[in-house]
Length: 168
Image 1 (cartoon, rainbow, N blue to C red):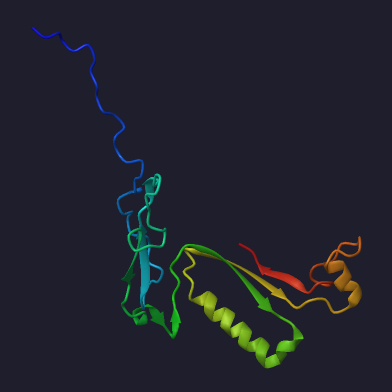
Image 2 (cartoon, rainbow, N blue to C red):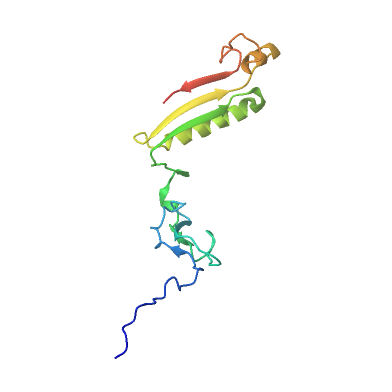
């Protein structure tokens, strides 16, 4: 009768050292970039397990990892009132208005009309507005104060021509 085996051999680590990366499932679609007239939304796959050895992995911008889709292709016309879009987003808005003499009387009046119309078309329940008018210093000595070149603190209105008309 033959003797029983005294050794046993089992193969291990016989798989290839090279492996392609493993990608996640697609993420949810992101928000559309436009409310109307066509925007895009995107989704992506991230790397779960990096490539090993000579394995490969698609680049972050490759179609296998990044997709775009058109969205909100409808017209914006229904959002207009009096030729303006009405903003319904919840935002804090800072308006900087040029009040320098270079605008002239007509330019200043047109700027004021534009800002007034813009503010009229914001939803006051969702939008906080701060308005600053700037024109700049008239004198060199005032300019030096405004840029901090001298120790004396400037009067922002008289020296620098910067005035807050409204705050949040």
